[in-house]
Length: 168
Image (cartoon, rainbow, N blue to C red):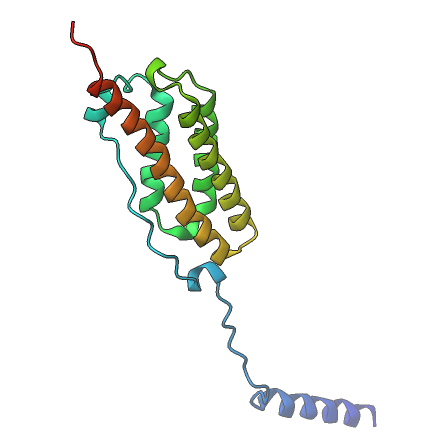
């Protein structure tokens, strides 16, 4: 009798194991939300070529060059890995704000424009960490605008110096 029960159980297991699974397979369509989000193209940034920096006595201001190069690289980046680059730009902006500005550029309005860039970088980091892609996209657009304002003011100060330069 004991053997008969074992054979029945084995037959039952064998029959159930041969059946196709009646469970419907659920396709896991899990996507990272950043992959499916379409960022707006970045606004065109104002560049400061190396020749311009040399001509206007800014080439020796290393922190500025590092920040400019970092920002230009950031705008070319695929936005899917933005948090690392935002943190890097924050560090570079902090270093730039603590650096010794060239005398002709050490003005409150230039420093304040850099502070605005720093503030928007913090906002971008917050949105990126919390995966608020729409808000991040808006903040990135504001970041490009504030960066352009910062660079435009530096260029206008240099232009004023050239314009009003007294020839000896």
